[in-house]
Amino acid sequence: MRKPFIAGNWKMNKSVTEAKELVSSLQKKVKDVENVEIGVCPTALALSEVKNLLADTNIKVGAQNIYWEDSGAFTGEISAEMLADINIDYIIIGHSERRQYFNESDQDVNRKVKSALAHQIKPIICVGETLTERKSQETENKVRFQVKADLAGLTADEVKKVVIAYEPIWAIGTGESATAEEANRVIGIIRDVVRDEYPQVADKVRIQYGGSVKPHNCIEIMKQPEIDGALVGGASLDAASFAEIVLKTTELY
Ligand code: PGA
Image (tube, rainbow, N blue to C red):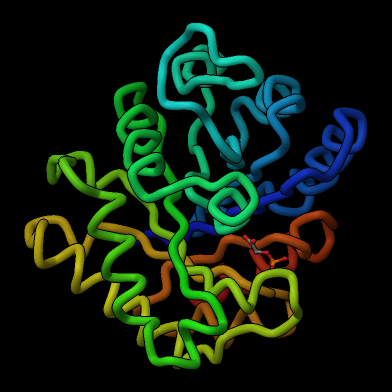
């Protein structure tokens, strides 16, 4: 049985002061949760302080991006090696906003995934289709291509540690989520793609849904058999609503 994983992607929100307040409040609300893994992904600036505050708690900490080299002349970037030094647990890689605004390709994503794994940090790899692709029935081809390219060259042992987030781009930050059944169907396809290459571990890989997950729709989404958690944007910026999503999910497992 896969342990569900609810992670909050804060994007470019919250100062260090606000980040510390948010996790302190969240921690009180979810401290007894055991059957759901919980994670928060603050900005790079707040990672160190947030990790210190959450050390020895049930909340994991993730970064939102890395560069794939360990160090060097790459102004403005941070590496997995540096994140490993402060015990960061996860790194979101290939979020659609990174792909769209910062031109990240699947080859970049693949390099970053390898770098994260080389430093024992688990990647949360984001894939998903645009509205145009969806309308032209390209969803399946798009996610197949992304998953294959993003995992290229990994060993089965590495793939076991990876989390994939299916995030239809048209559902991110729009208040419009995919229907739970549709998300379940696409996530099933993603698992089949993983199974093609890595039959031994495909059932172990956790695949989240992301895109306007809120307290009012999380049960329906989390009830689906293929969906192993959620990557939550907007609703993770408020301790009460993020905790509500986590607590509602605990009741299903
Ligand atoms: P949203 O963002 O929940 O605000 O739609 C999800 C994401 O981008 O990960």
